Length: 465
Image 1 (cartoon, one colour):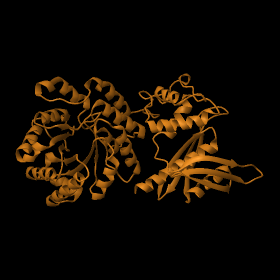
Image 2 (cartoon, rainbow, N blue to C red):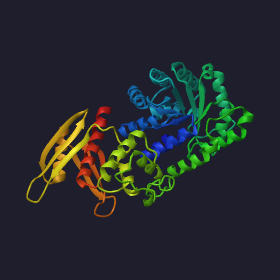
Image 3 (tube, helix red, strand yellow):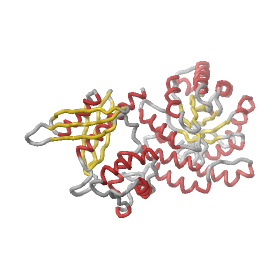
Image 4 (cartoon, rainbow, N blue to C red):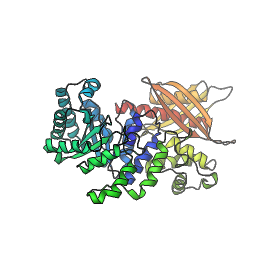
């Protein structure tokens, strides 16, 4: 649950790349399920789920739905391309949580469970029902809720000790009572989620597995839930004698767990979570790309810097590198800036083909820009109050819309007369800010690419509605 917890915790602030790195590590380790946070109104959540879905090859990718039917559709659309997608319906089942958190009476909650699980099962073959605060629920109602979920299509039922008050001898009794009172429970996987308020979560989880539970929710750093290393150590030491096992690669767990713990450490240094384990830049002498560098050389340099990019991102990075190396060679610092601004962006609706910008102290600045959209070449020709203004107006002419420019920043990435410039553009649309980045030895070119990058994000969000 590391990635789900990260999204709900004020202690964490992980970047897009850090989240995808954690997902890839968990997938490589053989985690049975990788659980993400629910998708909110933020379209960045949808982009993250879709990106992780494309990266995870071995694990089930689980994503919780909201409280509405519409949330089922939006969540499924984001996770459906995963190799093994799962939808999660999580609702409180204790009297106090049902009334004060959800405002539902028991009968209403049962109907809600049936409706949401059926809706999820209609599109996804793997549906998890998460009974939150189950250890404080009325036993009779808990059994009803679980039975309703299973008959509606749930394939996994997770019992949650949300309050963290269960003792290690009590949790297995609860699991056994579920099997006794809900006959259909034997046809699905029973999971447990143990809160570590009393530092007994790992013991409760192990005792529950011994009583028949098939899944245990864990995190990398063990914050308020069992630590994955602790659970794996118990399986390694006593799994054979108890007759159960885990698919986790225990041999590689220590290294991967240490790597992920560095990323999620709440005391991370202020610069980047990748400075130690994932270095942002190799020594300058190790990266030297010139006009003779092919895509293999670029890929080798990227890996030397600690990055692992997808094929699509590699192609984008290579195209950006080729634009620069015809003028000057690239070192690690320049390549790092290109990777940061190019990789893991939204699918481009608009692509820059060419631009010509003229300006001087005795002429009005003009911009002639050619862009491509859906295979069609579009042209903008505009005069403006300076080269940047003319370029932005030409882009707006092509797009056919005006956007409020909220922020515009230019800074040098490297030193010297041929320094690369990094440009940040923030556009406001529909009350939201959309940022774009551009990198080039040409400040005008960097600004154009940053502006188009921001527009592409606006277009992407509008198509997702």
